[in-house]
Image 1: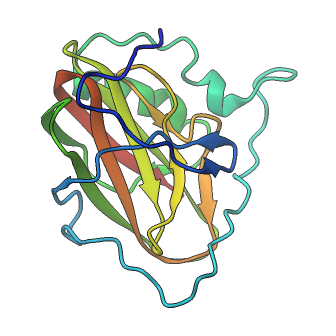
Image 2: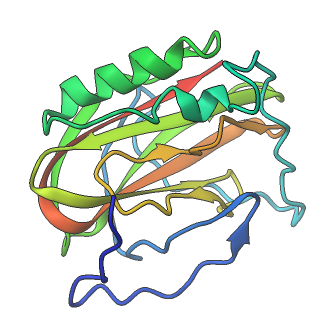
Length: 202
């Protein structure tokens, strides 16, 4: 994976630091597509200004001394350029790390770097629920970005990688103590092509 310069016309303001990582900014104009039966919706803002405190990721046995199993499951992954096939391989490898399961269907969409980001929603039903997002693009996509927002519209986690198969968060699942509708934004930062994305939880 190699770093790339932002494409022309995609100068983006920096986002604030997030726990464990910094979210890469995405376009402000957003295209809206439904990922689950809840349909497409804007991220609702609660009246309270209190931010949700992410809970620690569920503990899992290490694969080796000093090895993070959440990272080890995708360390040796090499994409083939088949979005659905690559996504299936990643989720099959990392899904065994814990009793997590897919909570949304696999959705494929086509996007160019000049297009607005696409938005998907998923519902967190109870405090303590943990989630991880997997995505993969075809050979025409060089940098695929993910951004996760909470029910209050706050940025919770963002992709810092410069590749076409982001995992969010990369170090392990993100757990929430606030139920509600969460928003996932997907953006092709460089290139053009088809991607597949799916949310896992448990």
